Image 1 (cartoon, rainbow, N blue to C red):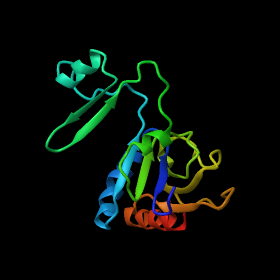
Image 2: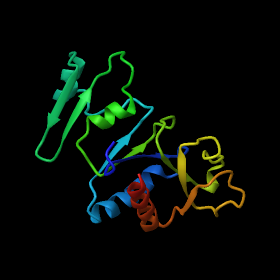
Image 3: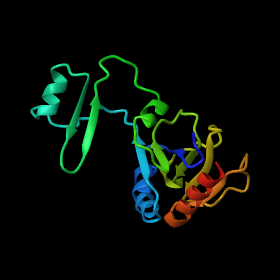
Image 4: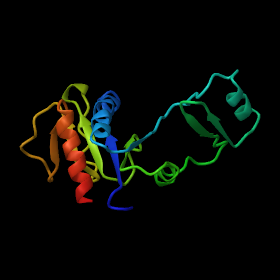
Length: 172
């Protein structure tokens, strides 16, 4: 991985605000001149197009991959058909180069992660058990008894989170 590239996980329990945080920081990073990719993992079957549309019909007919192109975007759909899902690095390698790729999901990936932790979710923080978490963005105060050195960020300050991301990127 080149020093200009960053692969960083955005970790947290369902409902903690991972996607909301990404929606808030992406425009800020882009406004600062960075090209940012996002890889999102889902545990659900994702429907790209309704069954009656052409690309869905072609996938159903057995195509291994279907690329759909329009004036505004294109997408590539690869049907696994029983194959194991690709590793995160394989997925990232299929994307165009960017200054950073933020990864939502892939909780078990051995990559640096920023945990999104909300005190009101009723769930315990992940950072004590996940040694890959390097920072926590939270609505709670920094605990006095953190078991290891972590950066603790204000979840409600997206500018500060962007600053942290760029500093973390610079150090890598």
